[in-house]
Amino acid sequence: MSGIYIHIPFCKQACSYCDFYFVTKSVQKEDFVSSLIQEIAALEGHLFTEEVVRSVYFGGGTPSLLTSDQLERIMAELERVFTLEVDELTIEMNPDNVTPDYLMSLKACGFDRISMGVQSFSEKSLSFMNRAHNRDQALKALDDIVASSFKNYTVDLIYGLPNQTKSELQEDIDQLMEFDPPHISAYALTIEHNTRLAKQVELGKVKPADDDHVVNQMDLLAESLKNYSLYRYEVSSFAKEGFQAKHNQIYWNHGNYIGLGPGAHSFWWPKSSEEKKKLIGDGLGFSKGSSSEKEVALRWSNPKDLMAYIHKKNDYQQKIRTLIEPVNESSLAEEYIWLGLRTSRGFDHTLLLDLYKFEFNTKQHVRLKKLVKEGKISQSGDRFSLTTEGVRLADYIALDLLS
Image (cartoon, rainbow, N blue to C red; front, side, top):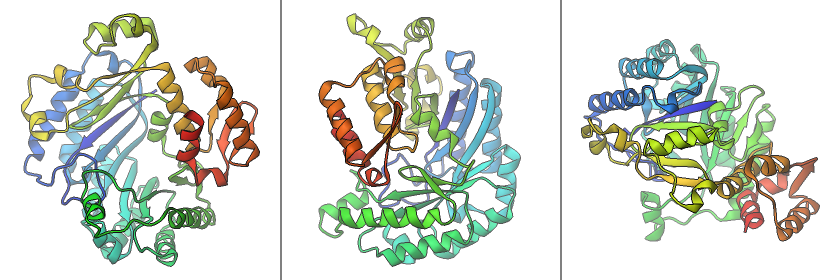
């Protein structure tokens, strides 16, 4: 099973916390769409198109700034080049782009899931984050989605804002629950380098919330959402039964995925030595020499440069092979543990041995047993997962275990 991620880099304005690649001028949208279609076409007959695609995700940026005609043309080219048997076709939207007619056109294009970036219903919080929409637009967008034929959608919330009280967060939760969403992604605000927020912190204009306050808000979220049958299946993800995001599970399980568009990332784990040789012969090279057998997978990314993406119309094979990072089994194993501990399924010790050829050393075994005894990790056979207490310290525990 594989997935496709398509990065649409256009935004109306820059959110203060965002470090994804984006541009705030949309005049090149049609040129971008033409280049994206050419990038897809350049993959025709490639190894990457031999695997059935189960999930396609349009992210950004703001994909909903594209017209339905542009989205339809992109989908038509994907269907021509790849074998699409998708279980989930998602598009990210901002509330100020939602209309009943646009939702109908998305459905006609084949989309069956919406990811809605609400973040907050508080005008104060929306202004702090420099979001392009306001409270009323968020409420109307959710009204339109509920009234539409989209039954599978997710809403983003951000918590842990400076000076955000628990009661303010509870108001956001209560307001959102009036729409009874089947899935919520709730993220603690993080200070990313080269963002407006990072500069504000550096200049002393913003003081980040302290860790205890953020953890308390995380607990409030989990307890509140549980009352609406929204259960945490990943540190930041809550879903009703049957509505867990399929696309993200490709990432968490080291499934293959292709990233299209400027700044998009790809990952490919060859299933056989023949596939690996084909990739090497294709220029997507593993390292040469004695270490090459230890490198079992590849990561690469497209340059974060819209104008270069648009103008390199005859150079796609080179373009998709920039910033290549061969990955060895040990790195993949550690990533599997790290990502696994963020999910309710945890990680499987037998799978670590069988698939990744990875075994904990003596000190790590001792540390793992201690974490189980302390009630931060639970054990069921060969599977280890974080307890409720452990989730609060997910990244710390993973780092501690892997150090």
